[in-house]
Image 1 (spheres, helix red, strand yellow):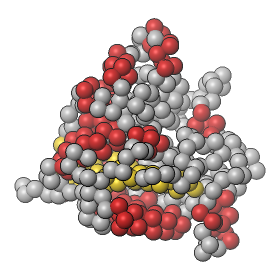
Image 2 (cartoon, rainbow, N blue to C red; image 1 turned 120 degrees about the vertical axis):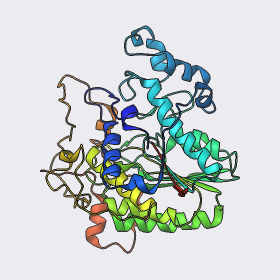
Image 3 (tube, rainbow, N blue to C red; image 1 turned 90 degrees about the vertical axis):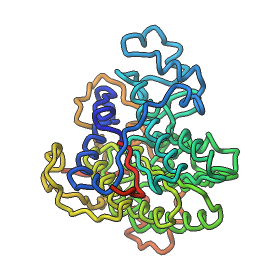
Length: 404
């Protein structure tokens, strides 16, 4: 995991749902459970501009390097050109932030290539929306594409799996016309939900599994295991990249699925069992205490270590009040009579324009696809799958690498 000191204190701005502080919380949970004693820990290098330009256009990389909050007013046309603004704001140390999380994924891929580990983790990575020439969906540099390009230097075929609630559009687009990378994305589609792609089954070596709101552990893991088992059997990848976006958890501020941490981590456990070189990253996740819980549990899964439910004392223990427990059950969703937006702890300016991701949660369409309603679901489960919103009140070398 990338050092919390380096990326955890990055601030996207008031009312922005992305909170890199979740990485600090994850890091301290990993330490408090003693998981750091079971793996090698590394600090990543800061990716050089020339490394970032292996995928991104040189002019875009140079712009990210140059732009600052104090100078952005001088570059109005470039901000539009490169899609920086409300969802992808300019903030202090933006380029360094990109260098660190991308460097972590590059280092993880290189360690897998050199066979110094069989599993490598970078929870700060997984920013799957960034495009070759522009930012998108809170993502500036697509570390996943860079990591896959690195893996392709040693492996004939790489499988990319994405369990973020949002479609992994940036990665799919980057490798859409090659047979050396297969992308498989399980995501929400419909209601004009961001990014608005991934609605079809995909072509060539891109597989999309678009889902409706409210899918639960049983339905999601059944789909996941059936599809991924067949993909691995058929495609025979030399390495796997698994993006573990935690916004597919129940109670996520921008998500709409009904997965528990156990259901989410079951996907990680299943992929690990193939014993194929595995690069694991983070991704989305906007209820930060649950993101930290999830990624700590999944670090344990990758280390074959089950964690006690009671969270040990650590610097961020109060964030896990009142129960101070690791596991949070999924949410039995109840369809509301009306929508109340679930804003984060930042005070909302009533005159501020609502961003696109919040708008996405307020729009409903009926023409969504959902795996034939999963024939073996009972009526209650089928209702959960069609409800369109969540509403809640209330020393020897070890074969695991953890990017610090």
